[in-house]
Image 1 (cartoon, rainbow, N blue to C red):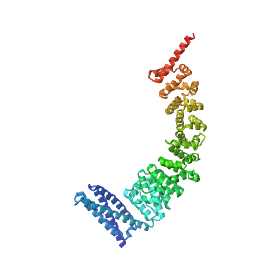
Image 2: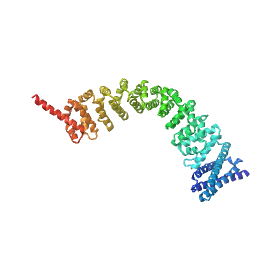
Image 3: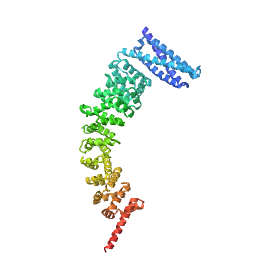
Image 4: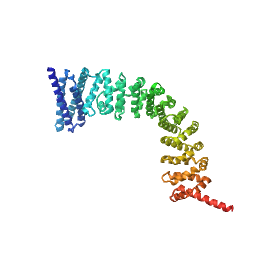
Length: 566
């Protein structure tokens, strides 16, 4: 009976304290002086209330002898706070310095109460037979319920067995997937993130890594993880952990390295060497995903010039070129993406990639015969263009590796996205050099490009026209173009169709042809489209005027020539 009476007294005192805290929080919002200090105290009130609620809900806390005097002390502190709040509200305090001192003193007392109550709750937790079971709040739970739950988890982190800690980590990872409020509260509690980081080096490594990985996905929380020293243990997990833990660690590093400021920390802890070692495994032993993640992390890091140079010196270029040759598609994608990033605005790296056989590897990825996805082919094609764009020798390599045939194949039969990218590549090739345009003409690009003038896609039609305009600068290509009635006929027909192709592009092609080809002029004169060109000339299209003048001078010359020989 005495125990029941004692428990009832404790419950009554706890209710009184929790109610008084609620009243003080409301009262503190009305105080207009010493606002920063009252804001700090208000935050501590919330923590104190959560801890008292945890004690209230504990089945065994009431049996702890130190609880009654502690509750009396808490009530005394709360009454002092109430007195100070009313003095500040009425501006009836005797001096600012004295009030500041009083507020600091009461704030320190609240800190002490929070710590002591937490220890009592932790001790009570161990005494529970069902301590391993964590009761999860509902989706509609209040912030107080969330805080109570997270405080309960922290208690388990501090004094629980390994199994209890493991279950607490699993519970935390489940709730933060669905509700960021749990993370918000965890960040407010001293040591919570510190415990997660500490657990990365223990027996419950994988469960801790899951939690850290989920927190790292939240942009505002990354700095908290970095501040808690997460980089070093994550790298140790990469070196010594189980495969699943390694993947989680790499995923976390991928998130935190989105900010290049964190790159130096990874370098200083030997992380670059560890990542390169993972890549050197080449996906053997079932760790394909880990290699892909390592490539992705390195891509984030090589944006720092000094780190890129370190990677190059460690043989990274040869390593990543070899990864681009491996069978697994995800590793191909990530390694090619990494090579492109390293090559960006760096001619020496581009040359190294070419020397290591990188272009050949990329052309093989792009090959129509390879059973790879459109995404992978697009990545390879972008890599080829980016790496070869400034190399004088790259054209010969591309021709030798059959690249021109691959481009033609996808221009004829490729999916729209690959076809568009192939056409952009053809346009790039036509602008590289005179030799490039000659090679394209000999490879048979012209008739394929002409057919694309009739494509459903406006972008494809216009880029085809631009590429043709660039190619016919070469006399041999011009001659081939004019030889086919279909080529010239389609250009003239598209010129008459509204919004088919940019008329300036088509007129540019015709201007080039009429300026140097008598055959082209004759075919245009007999095609029936000359009147439309004259109308365009009247509409102030400058190239149309040039064509009309050329055609007129050609007819006049023919007349004079006939008179001369009559």
